[in-house]
Image 1 (cartoon, one colour):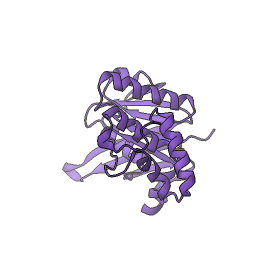
Image 2 (cartoon, rainbow, N blue to C red):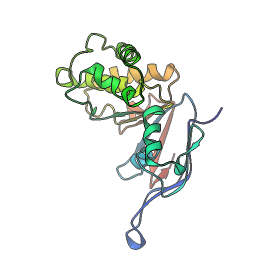
Image 3 (cartoon, helix red, strand yellow):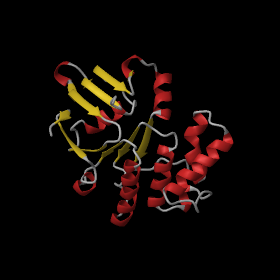
Length: 223
C-alpha cells in the first residue's frame, strides 16, 4: 500500500555559515494509511518544523516530500493551498475558529473553498458536528461554546473534506484534564474509522494513545 506521506532526507536550514541552523537535519519518515502517530520532543527539536513541512505550510531546503504519490517540491503555492484543503486536516491548540461564524459555518468553510454545493456542505457539516457530539450546537458562535466544544468544532472542520492525513498540534494544550479525555476519545474514534492521525504533544499520557511515538532531537527522529 502506498504511504500517505514520505519525507526522504529532508533538511530545513535557516541562515548560513556561522549562523546556520538545521531545524530539520536529514529527516526520513514514512506515514502509512491508518496510522496513529504521536510526535514528542523538546522545544527546538525540529518537531514543529517537520509538522509544518508535512502540512505543506513550509517547504524543505533540501530532500523530497511525497504526499499521496505527489512530489510536493515541484508544486507552486496555489497547488499547495489546494492540497492543504483537500488532502490535509489541521487541529491547533488555539482552535482558530472565525468568531463571527456559527459552528456550522466554520465547519462548512473548507468546503466553500473546495466548491462543494451549498446543500451538500450543510449536510456534511451537520454530520461532522453530530459525530463530535455537537449536533445541538450548530448555530452557536465560538464565544457561546466552551474550550472543549470549540476544539470539537475545529476537529469537525479538519475532517470535513475527508483528509488523507490529520495533523494535530498540541490539540489538548489549552484544555483541562476532563475535556482532554473527551477530545482524545474523538481522535481514538477517528483512528478506528481509518483516518491517519499525527499528533504533536508534550504530554506522555496523550502520546501513549498513539500506536507509534516519534521522539525528535536535533532535527531528526531519535527514537
